Length: 94
Image (cartoon, rainbow, N blue to C red; front, side, top):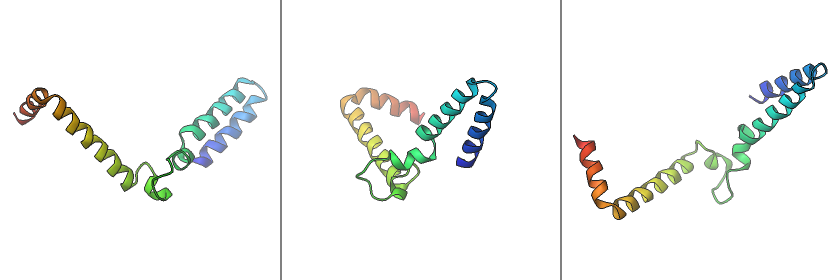
């Protein structure tokens, strides 16, 4: 992916000698790639979670954290809205 982005940026810079708007597009492409691309997942994933493989968005630890957080919210919702949660459970059953 990085090779495609870099080669695309080079092409846009070359095109930019004729039309300077392409330079802005190249800068925007690099910004989007650095902000949301593969490099951002390792650098912005937080510090308390172990190694880079565990802290990646697809890692098992991240999955467990999301699952536990969702379970916590579900328990809180059922506790604070018992009638609504029973109605939803009835709708799911049949």
